[in-house]
Length: 285
Image (cartoon, rainbow, N blue to C red; front, top):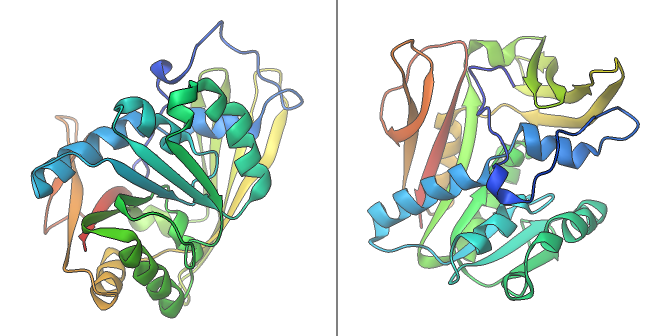
């Protein structure tokens, strides 16, 4: 994503055993591993969930449902953060869930694995234990392109929460979010490239890709493709209200002395007009 419009997240070194710096090539690299390294930072988001949930509910959450969980990186990290934590990962793609079992559940011990449940199902119809927190991160719900589709999903989320449960979403925008552009970002051992290939201002549909480049000159093109609708905060909050949520709050990122995002998200009713931004929305059941 544009660097001012996306969380530049990193997988924590504490998440798994680390060895020497990998010599990545297009032939040898694993796209899911690269995605986790370049996009995800579950520890930071778990800290944000704990802080805000305790502030709003006076306790820490125990049960997390990770929708569109993919490799279940967050679900697995969640159970390691507290011995009382349980997680549920929901995703439709069986090969990705199998990757999660082989590569992420494998670094949990037996007791930790017993507190993770992975479900291959549609997030709009899944039947799962009620959760304290349901999270839809990395803009995954943008796959729903119409109001009825997104409303159906939000209603399903509300049904899946405990009475005092909270729904966590992230979203992005800014005037660069509508540009056709590519933006590279250096990571450890490879380069991540966010490619905004198409945007339709009439429908707000956007087509984006992630590519990876390697020091030997090889490339992994279109490792991931996203055919989304670029939803606005106003549209999302209106649909949350229509789905029956009691309230929703935008958590806007603060800035440092240079005007760059500082990674601290706080409740706000006013955002900045800028090239790109990322924010969280927390909806109370």
